Image (cartoon, rainbow, N blue to C red; front, top):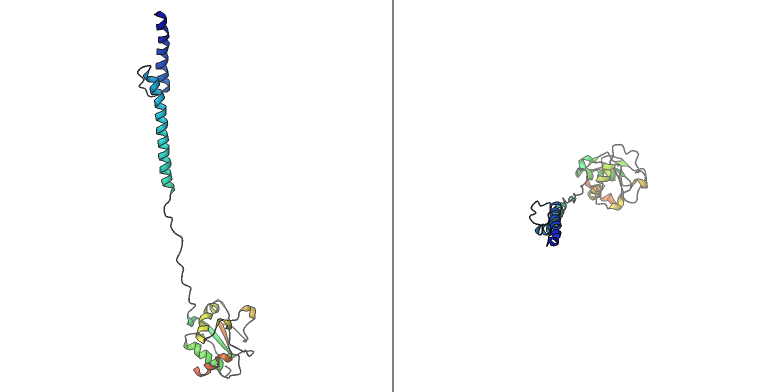
Length: 196
């Protein structure tokens, strides 16, 4: 009988001391229940920690999705139609032997609102009308000048083709060297100078 009681005492001692140190729950009331509580408590703690981490990751995931970012696609702006005719200075040079051709073409352009200079004779004759943009304004105005005279893009000359065959381009945006294909313009009005 005495021998049986001795082992019970150390068991009773180890139960409470283990439950008190490992559980951290502060409610250990019995050697048998205490180990069960201490074993369940960490499991519950780990599951709650897992659930809290999963919920935090879920919330962070929700925060990470930024939703609809502002679209950067700006609407395409309409291409400018060119400068106003009144701001474009056009010099017409007669590139033919038809007297008054440059003056007549000058009148035609003036009637369409273009600024014009006194018509001149070109330094050489040309087989067809040529259009030389002299500066940036002239380059922008060329499509409208072509339309005003009923010319195609093939009439346009660039810097690579050399300067226009006139003595001066001072104050000029576009030079039109009138060729035989504009001879019908002679009837549109009187020549602005005897040389044109």
